[in-house]
Amino acid sequence: MSEGEKLLELIRSRQSDRRYESKPVDEEKLTRIVEAGRMAPSACNAQPWKFIVVTSKDLIRRIADAASVKSISMNTFVDQVPVIIVIVRENANFSSRVGGSVKTKDYSLIDIGIASENICLQAKAEGLGSCMIGWFDERMVQKALNIPRNKRVVLFITLGYSLSEPRPKKRKPMELVVSYNKY
View 1: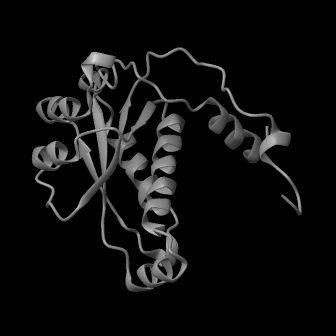
View 2: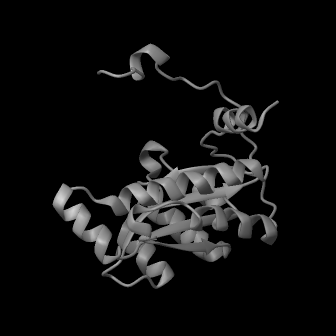
């Protein structure tokens, strides 16, 4: 199997996992995972992120409280995860901010999306499951992790050894989402 085929298979097999073993994640794996995020490309090399790796059970519970909506069973699994990577939006460099202003695009959010997927793909390569979470009480997360009020928590990613069964991907057919040389 070629390197390209291996990468595509990794991408195809990555899923949002919501059940994890309680065992801790090896520090070496965590280091490679955050390195994958750190190495993500960004507009004008702005690198507008800070990754906070949370392994403290108390802090994980506090973040879970910020994310859980028990009445509709949303994100109720978060308190069982061994690791959370919180992604804080940092100020972009001058070039990226100017370019974003001219084009009316927030490149920092695009950049954080790229870094987040790098993290999830590296987690999969390390034998771990992951899930990106965007629904949470931002102020509660800021308080729990001493994040300044002028910083934005964009999302966080749960990590751990998955207990979830692989699920088939439901994707639109290729011909509905891809065209060549015209819309």
